[in-house]
Length: 275
Image: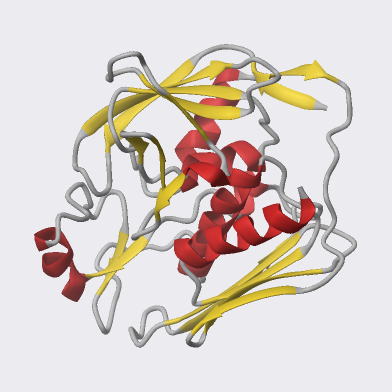
């Protein structure tokens, strides 16, 4: 079954790193094109496929590019789309980075619900199955795809900041809806890193309205939506990055202290062996 949107819907906001205000329109797509971005502000309106081949860089977000046309911080919207089973959509954006909205995927879920969905074909999509364990690691961080009879995700994080510490979350789409269990989890950051990141040209659009922020002792903008909201948000990021395969292979995905770099390296490894 291949699904797209019924109608067009749009969302506006600032990009996390650029600080630039942008508008993104989600438009029903052609069944043969999958999920793809269109930079409407650039000459010729270049298209950028939401595919692993288009990954350009992964510093604190996942950026896709074709030639000089780029689109950054794609992971939250892509997680919402794959989480709701949207296989085909045209994503028209008038700037270089997606709006962060509230830092989660919840408002993207609302936009998709507003647009509605339609089935383009009842033809089943072939879903690859991971038959042998795949592990990638960098120092003590790792990400893995393990053989499993159903799709499952488990994510662990470990920070010296007391409000976070060591957290884990495990989620199966067969038992809990993405919209309730994962989508509301917001991105997070640390008060003592803000100045350094801003000087590096990053998080120009970050604020207490679109990210959870803590110092060594407490959250600066409580309450949290889940006790382990940071771990759930990292799981959200992983789903968004794996969506760049088009179809996420059946496996138990296990990650610990991982990054967009490791997420996308795993996706590239799976693409080389399964697709």
